[in-house]
Length: 256
Image 1: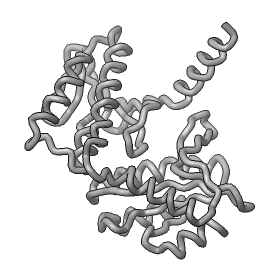
Image 2: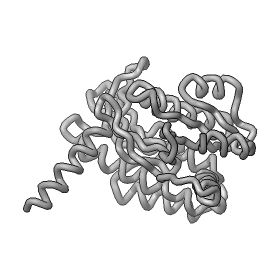
Image 3: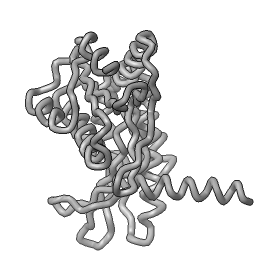
């Protein structure tokens, strides 16, 4: 039983440290979960109370927006539509107009939210049916670059912050006096670029508060013309921003 106790304790700490629920300015409760979309954004669910005192919980359309960004089209593919409905129906989750949601009484919220989370997580993985999924390609391309440059690295390192929360960085370089946390940003549209930058800003701001002796590098896939000046300025507040096409500058930042 000792090994089971150890496993359960570790999982409990991991889950509890990665879950957050807070009310936003619109009176909607935002549940941040320990599960990720394929682009490494945390899956978030949005909760609001209805007039009859039940609760509506949804992904606010984020899942399909992410899939659409990478070319996952439903309109021209009956097969993909069938896959979406098969996944959601099997878990008792409703899908309508690009949004996954459930309606539940307060005493049902735990189980229903779990069903919704599983549905969203499974659907988001359908991005891997799209030829040339860009975020995965960019991460793999970057890994090939650092490997060929003989730079020691760790992919997907977990960092624990002051509040006890745990976040992943895409790459971690620790062969020089100053360790470096690296987050990659790739997006197919300006709107999604803003969302990606929000996640990076939040993670690096927490890292800055926890340990300012770690270098923070935001590397933009600038082959897509989606990175506006306000996005870059905001990222510069918490990190060093580098363009992927400037390999000399990227190499210098990684090896200095």
